[in-house]
Image (cartoon, rainbow, N blue to C red; front, side, top):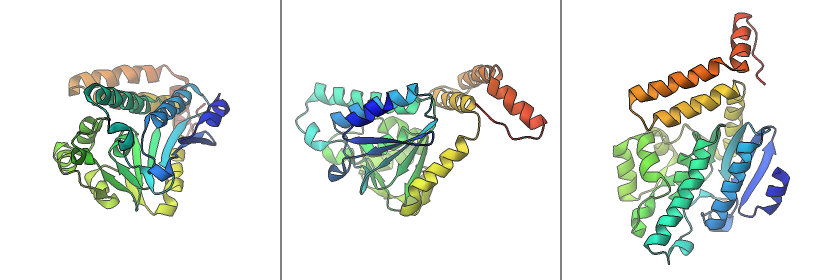
Length: 263
């Protein structure tokens, strides 16, 4: 299934590194800007990642100087109201697939992550930035607003005040500023970026994949709820964990002072 899909991809590359799928945005001449074809290919890749039991986690990065420099303005320029709304809805659906993938997703942000590129990174679980990375939501300079999830995910991640400053000014921020905002988890030298993402993914994949899946679901669902309802979700998902083989393996190994081997 994967090989058939990979052969059809043009704007996105997908390669396996062990059990990790490395997805590379691959329109370097356009700084990997998001057009309809790119969104189509991203959706196909993440549909495949959700179904393929040999894929344990996903890393997204970019080819060349850009992670993703935004949506494709050449494509958007003639859009009127209905077309703009539909385009926003399709991009949101794509990023929702990434956010909802029941496997960990790390963004390895190598360069420009502007507009839709910043929003793509926001849909991932964890963000690692190269020292050369640049972030921003410059949509207001084009007379529109972030509409691939930026007005919703960004304030949830870094707080309303900083998110409003980024969105209202449209200014770019460098990697260290993004780190101070809490937009990224860490900043590393450019040449170490992919290795750092793979090392973090390796640490994640040592633990129970079932527990990771339910922890991600609990965090994502709880973010949209008040505390008490979020705690109910957490309790229910914890109950499901207690019914799994991973729980038996993990707790038995702990009591026997052994390292657990999750299947």
